[in-house]
Structure formats: C-alpha cells, structure tokens
Amino acid sequence: MIDLQPIILSLELAVTTTVLLFLAGVPLAYWLSENNFKFKPVISAIVSLPLVLPPTVLGFYLLVTFSPAHFPGNVLQEVFNVRLIFSFGGLIVASMIYSLPFMVNPIQSGLESLPLTLKEASYTLGKSKFRTLVSVLLPNIKPALLTGIVLSFAHTIGEFGVVLMIGGNIPGKTRVASLAIYDEVEALNYHNANIYALVLFVITFLILLSVHIVNNKFLKSVRF
Amino acid sequence: MISLQLYKTLNTADGDLPLDVNLTIKNGEFITIEGPSGAGKTTILRMISGLLKPEKGHIKVDDALWTDTETGYYLPPQKRKAGFVFQDYSLFPNMTIEQNLVYALEDKHDADYVKEVIEIMELEALKARYPQTLSGGQKQRAALARAIVRKPELLLLDEPLSALDAEMRLKLQDYILKVHRKFKLTTILVSHSISEIFKMSDRVIRLNKGKIIHDGSATNVYAKKYISGKFRFTGEVLSIEKDDVVYIVNVLVGNNIIKVIETDNHTAPLKAGDKVMIVSKAFNPLIIKIGD
Image (tube, rainbow over all chains, first blue to last red):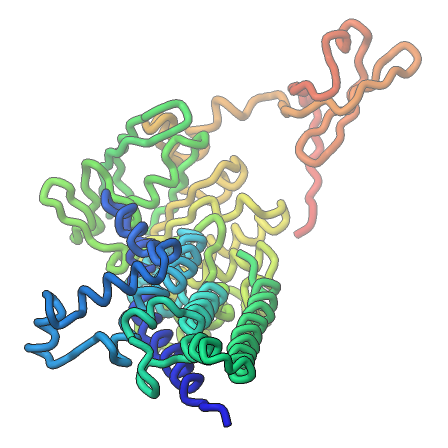
C-alpha cells in the first residue's frame, strides 16, 4: 500500500505557503506599484530572483542562513527557540521566498494596469488608501489575484531543490510528494513513483485549468 | 469664496511650460475653463482636488486652507470637499451603479440621500446595472451622481461631455445645471464647446500656454471673435464633381455634408482632404427649433 503522507504534506505545505504568501504579497505588490524610488529596480530584482536562480542555490543559502551555527539562525534558535532547518516551518519560509515572484509579479502588474483615475476617483470620494485598495483596486484585479494564488500553489507543490536542501527529506516531517517520487525511483519502485507523479500531475493540471476557465469568464465580463 | 494661486511646470509636447494662474471664484459661481489642449486646464482641476501638488502657490476655500506650499501644508484629496467627474467616468466596474453611489457616502446611515440623488438624476432604472453595461451618457450621469453623493462644496468637471453625441450632451448639460443649482455648488467645468460655455457658465476663463488670457462672461470673451454678420464653418473637402460648367464641392462640416457650387478658378487649388472654411453672409438666416 502506498504511503499517502508525502501527498498530504505537499498539500499542507502548499496551502499554508499560499495563504501566508498572499497576505504578504498583496502589500508588497501594492507598495511596488504605488511607489517609484531610486532603489525600486533592486527590490524588483530581488523579488524576481527565485525565477531564475537554481533552487539548490537558494536552498543552500537558506540552509546556511537558518543554521543554528551562524547568525541569524543562532538567534532564532536561542531567543525564539525556533529552528528552521529540517523542519516543516523551515519549508514554509523557504517556499514563501521561492514562490514570492509568482505571487507578487501578477498582482503588481494587475494593479499597474488599472486606470489611474479609478483610485483617484476613490480618493476624491473621501476614501483612504487602504479602503481604496480593498474595495476598489483588488476586486478589479481578480484574475491577477487568482493567477498569483494558483501559480504560488502549483509552484510550491512542484518544488524539489529547495525543500530537499532545507528540509532534508525526513519522512512524515519534510518528505513531500516531489521528494517521495525521487526516493521511490531510486529504490526502483516505479509503480509508487508513478502514482505520486500522476497525483501531482492531475492536481496541478486541474488547478491551472480552473484558473483559465475562471479568468476567461472574468475577462469577457469586464472592460475598462 | 475660493482663492487660488498656482504655479507648476507643465511637460508638454513643445517642452516645459510654466502654468501660472491666479483666480478668485465666488461661491455658487459656474465657471468654465477653456483653451487648447496642453494649456493646463486639467492640471488646474487636479491641483484643486488635491490629486496633484503645485510647485508654488496656495488654495483657500472659504476660511479653510487646502494647499499652501510656503508652509508645506497640503490637505489630502480625501479631506477636500470637492467632487471630481473624470472624462473617462471612472465608475468602479466591480460595483453596480447604486453600490458606486453608496460607496461615496460619508455616513453609511445616510442611505436615503442616495435614493434622493438617484431620483434627481433619474437613475432608478439603471441602479442595479454594472457600469460596463451602460452607454456613455448613462455612465456620465452616474459619475455625476456619485460625485454629488459625497456632498461636495465644489464640483470639478473635467471635459465630462466631450465623448458624447450632441443630443446626449444637451441632456447632460441640463443635469449638470440642475445639480449645480439644487445643491448650491460652485462648479468648475473644463469644456471646448462654445455653445456649452454660453449655455452654462457665469464666467469663462480662457487659458493659453499656462496663462489666463481672458476672464469674463461668455459674451465678453467670445463676442468679438466669434459673433459676426457672417456664418463661418471649417470643414474638409470630400470630393469635387464637375457638373456642366460649374463644380460641386462636397465639404464635411461636423457631421453634415454641405454642397458648394464653385467655378473653375475657385476650385483649381482645392483637392479632396483639404481643410477649408465656408463663409456666408447671412442676410436672412432662418432659425428652426429642433427637438425639445
């Protein structure tokens, strides 16, 4: 009988990462879309870095950073009693960094594509920037929000290098489905590998399919 | 009483241009700002509403200071009681017309006021619809209604009628005048249409290259230049047809094609696509009322 634990762990990781990343990504995307400052290209480049950086590079640096042997890992360990390497918490932090551009970039370009007068109209109606963001801007970039959420989710499900480096492939704790596939193949259990692979394939395909269906509908209904 | 003195450098196609205006507007006045594009009309409205900061200057509305660059004081747009109607309407696509209006309410318990505005602006039949399903004129009416719901003291209209056809313009002009009077607003309109300016404004500010070049009643500002014993239209030559010994020149003026009979020596330099002026001495013009 196949062990379902890695798949459940993958889903848990993807859901938690996506929720936290959404909460962090919206303010970051809003801030980037609203402001134009000298160092903005630097910030944008850092946000986009995980798109091109080999996951093992990112995983390696995170491993070094969070290791209790150095700062800031030792501070986390001693002051907050938190150890981010070889733990589920560490996987979440690493996944959030790894999927950051997938959340921030679509939301940022969604916000930037809105007509400027939309928020100006809201300001002249006496509404604060926060109220404008929540009631006017975000509801009008639903496809971008959905794209950000889904890409982050699917990307987290599919990550391998980062989780391997920082999570250490511990069964029941940090062994997610993508790692399990690798293990099964190494052990020549092609049958099990095939099942894990198929489950991931079907989940990610269905998610992407639903996004395209929903976005298609939304784009037909709204024209600026 | 609104007094303003504003200075800002405009980045126009012809390079940088200083916008430098000094104005005093009486409460309840309907004033139109007119001038060629790039003259700074919209910039003035945006600075009054607080969407744009002037480089130098001040804005004072009654006893309240809105902008003062000397002390660095700058009241945010949210706190200025100025309704702004944008040229592109800027209704929120995620809300129905009624929700757009309710959003503008300062006090959520004031829902009756929304009903009143809906009634005045005759939006009853449209209130459950989304902006993208409305025509241009309907959208502009809704945008005007939304600005009113905020209970502004000052209404700023940035070419609100320029995208509408003639009939719709006339109707909306009436709506604007109606709310201007009913809510005792001070209104500043940006417009290009002379007939609109004559119909609506108490006072016209003519702007050119960032400076006020005329300030007065519509008759004073335009009378000498535009009203004369002649009719004068500008148009474009569509085609020139030969008919026996004369030529018939078809000229497009606005949406009308006017046929002008000319002799050979007049038509010789003309060709299709030329910009021309048709002038006629109007000894016996007929005035016929159209529509209501």
